Length: 226
Ligand code: PEP
Picture 1 (cartoon, helix red, strand yellow):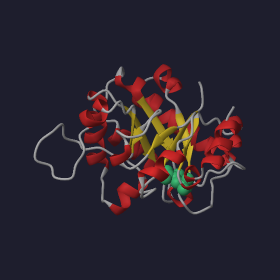
Picture 2: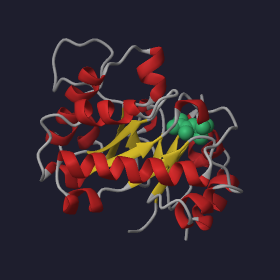
Picture 3: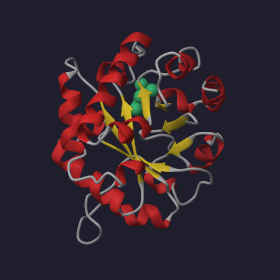
């Protein structure tokens, strides 16, 4: 599996000129929505609506993203769960709508403290998703305490969480399907720790937040994953 590096720019930068300078080849760039039609390269969105179209002020349809040639959408990020009160049920509706619209879904899961939550997040988040649709799903394992804190998860702990996630997916779908699903690691990734997640912990890629805002650093992260 070719390592998948996803850059989550969150609510940065605040100008198109800056955004254009921050593009790095070899990563899926997830900028703020408004730049999606204006940037080139492999693009992802940071969220989408659970609805197709209609009277939902301020929302963005997955069909609109698809029309802009956006390939991926991040759903269930811990910031959306915490700051925007997104529940597993709401996330599941978005996951299903995004898949039905032809997008690849990057479903974020991760514990605040207890790993039991991973099973719940995966079970509820993927409810009603067909086996065929699972070929368009990517899981990002992001322990909440590691996001934006500088406290990245150890290689050993990441490895055991990835094994646990694959086991849960195997029970939900099948071993063959679970083995094919890319599982990424995210949480305070930088160019010094990135390679180990791919080469030692068994991650199939990385979801990078803060470090993805520095193009040189993101390039080094990409290089370290090969
Ligand atoms: C993220 O936003 O998903 C993330 C992992 O952020 P950071 O790399 O800054 O911890």
